[in-house]
Image (cartoon, rainbow, N blue to C red; front, side, top):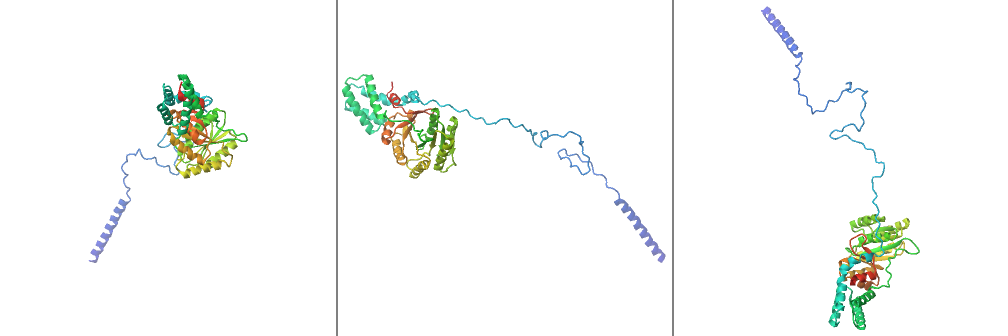
Length: 402
């Protein structure tokens, strides 16, 4: 019995050993290789490992940075820098001479003013000049904004002269009317824009006026007038409340070679004006033109600030001119503006703009009477050289026509 049990144990051991050999041989058997994969042509090439041989021989000529393509874009091309400056300096304009400008612009002026002259001549040519006719003459003058007092003076003068004259030919009437109008406009007044003080340089001119009168444009055109007369100019852009004003003024200056001093937007106008005069002194120019903000005459605070600009500038030197720019088309409202400005700064001269666009040329007479200062310049169009020195004879000739 014991022999049978021993035999069974030996058999079990032998079978277990044989099973282990078989399992071990299976574990040591290598796995089959994976199936071949389709190469991904979009995948980036594998990075080289340490020890890998470089595919490109070391003695191959190396490419420069100009020849290397950047991923996703064309090759970078490095250009040689230009030999000279790329910025082109605009050619300076040569303004039209100012002498006789108003005569050359007479046709433009007479187109809008003939209604006054022709109306008066027609009335004066009537065979019988009764009271009704003289009233019509008065109405014609008042409609042209001559003003009440100047109109009465003109009518009285005409009535006296016509009574003495007796018979009246068209030529005599035209000559009579011309003489009386010249008396009103004034021929013995100095209308020169003062820009050349005897004891110092530069001359200082401040330009003031209400919004919309063309004040900044007038300042730029005045710079052209001065340059045309052989003077050098610095512009002060003291209208800091209107963003485009300084740019507009600088553009006007660049066209004729005038330097523009400007400050930050909404900055202190008095500071800009002060710096403009300082720069003008250092540069040795002949004239400094200061463009101020177009202040509404109803805003007392802004008018006070205009007075401040004047006081600050006069720390350098007295102002030689304070020019008030008025829109001729505003008529009697322009006189209201003139009164307020005259209370703040001492107006020395008047610039009437848009005189070619109104039949109310009598404003020349009215504003001179109101302020006691002469009209020195008139604007007769949108052109750069359409600002002309005021000449009474040429103006009256345009009023009454040929």
